[in-house]
Length: 100
Image 1 (cartoon, one colour):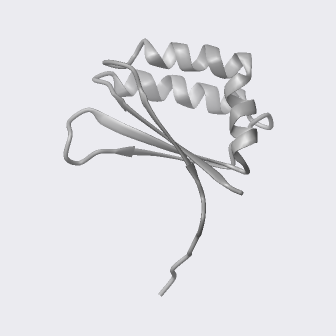
Image 2: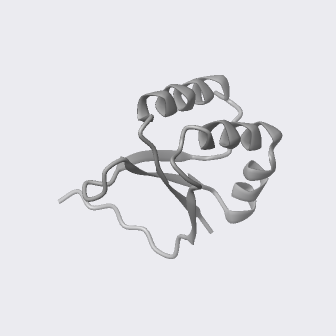
């Protein structure tokens, strides 16, 4: 079963956050477990962002979380945030694609 993790965070340092994120994405090319990632900005709350990350399964997401490079990366990102992130862990029950 597919799995999605939503990470909500607040930062006034989004440019620094994104530079670190872009560097990590480039550095880990060919070594990622996640299959898709979206970064979003909350239109109703200033400086609030959500990253939506898709994985093939919950087990693979937890494997990714347990990697030392993921732990170190998350700690570095946390220093750029205005508080701890909020995680939502979601099993995908249904998926639809609309093109009409």
